[in-house]
Length: 459
Image (cartoon, rainbow, N blue to C red; front, side, top):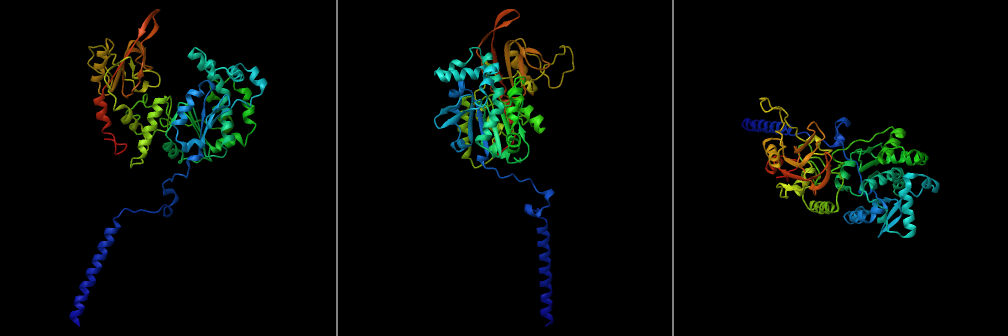
């Protein structure tokens, strides 16, 4: 019997030792919890439930442009979003199964007749009655036409908001856009899920504000809680500088809220004008502005192709570069402006070293001036480690920074730009021809881009 006990005791000891080892091993596992087990303060924020039909997109147009702007937009918008899409203008029109609402039709006849800013609206109604081609409404001078439409837009703004709510009340979000805005719907949906629509939210990037996002709480506050508000402001619009200023003033004075800038997600750029680089790479793309029909078509194709990919990563600016810029033959181009200078791009414009040649000290990051020729400008870019593109104008042009007006323009961000035909301009009291030439440091930028890892598919 003693011999049996001697066998059992070592076995028990061995079993205990194994159990302790297993317990120690398991205790080293990462600790995970269901959200309900964690204290509220330690729980990760969970995106709210938001269905696509809870996002109303309202597009503003004008009668003279509706027939050219809207058909491409409608064709290239997924039919799944058509029920949540509204079209707003200054004359009721029918485009196939779609209706363009006249948001100005609630102004009184006397108001329309007596207001000089409503002249375009009066003419639009007259042209409709007499069956005159709406194309004849446009001013021949582009700047004058832009001014006429800007004045009318001030009176459209609040009525645009009003009609959008009346046609689709009690939705979670309202997105007001211009016809040349392209929305990346999956990113829009994902972004808005992180906000509560029953709190005041007003997203926009002034002064252009081509995309405006208002929450249900904001819309209810001005449409339901204060039904007198919009009629009250009818007579207080004329002095405002822009349509956006009208809306911003109403929301600020009434609800004490101001617009929340959302850059670069709500963007003034498109794939050809975006400044690709460290400051704009992994950011998600929610909206783009000034999108031509051909670019919208390419974006439609690109997004459809992405649906078939196994990854569900959000579309970011890096994706746009790999799709639209990388395939281009980026050799020096005549009659081309790649936006190395100009308003809105000054933060990427490389400053020139203005020190005299005999100074031994060099300013960090600055480039050697390249004024004599486009070749000198190109070489200046090549010598500067931060430069990824250059442009050369035949006469000094603004850089909107301390460089002042120069012929050579260098940039730390890469942009495609666009063709610019030679222009006859007044220069120092004489007629002169302005021409552009542009080039890119492709290998330098490619080397940088391939080292970035927003997503694993970028290689």
